[in-house]
Image (cartoon, rainbow, N blue to C red; front, top):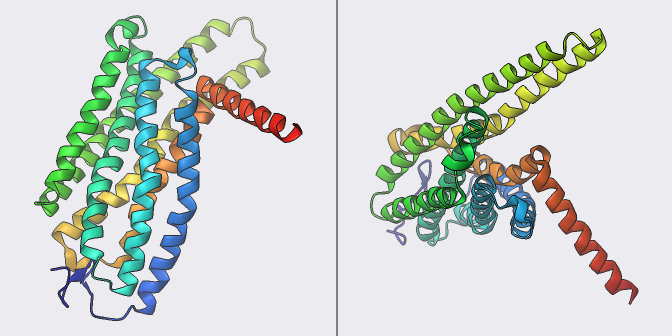
Length: 309
């Protein structure tokens, strides 16, 4: 099949034709964007993985899930993004290696991107449980259970990825179902988190109303709205990055005649989430941010000492 002159590329492109200007205008910018994401994705997630083990205070169920997310996001930076670039260039050259790399791409995307999405969903549920059942949370969500959850995601997606070698279209649809399920659960969870945060802010406002000035009360309201809004940022990024890829997969499996090479960008957008995630957690998680900054300062001090010797 790989050596056939009618080996079809995504979107109905035949391997024996020359690359069109339309293909080039889509593939080249997409490849450049993939290349730019590689160092960002690797650097951010390496910092998280380097900082967490050295700080005992971060050895919690939440950071175990965060570390699992960082591992999957790191592997998106390498090898998923380089494979995407290689496939794009092979598509332009009509090289017969396309079929093998395409299968590798599907395997890696199902394994790593699905692990990332499912782990982000688990993190949202973990955050909800910590807020909603803060008294029972330490006993109900332990580090061991968080490790079991992370291991389940990895094992399940290894099986799906291996099955995609024989039943590509079926497994792609199964992956889309998991993506839709994760987005649905995250929608419910983040809506619940938003309500809890607003309720807590309302209680604080009520308790302090009698002793605060009008300006201080107004500032408290603004802060409450900002905190509630911030809980949605993870969800918004997740939705914007994964929903287009799910649509692309559905079109590719069921309506191949409507699929065209522009949909390559949806895979890049999905991978973009792996580059964004570590910076979101730097911004929102003070302990992780302080651990990373401490690590960076330590490395810089060692570098300065070597330079001055």
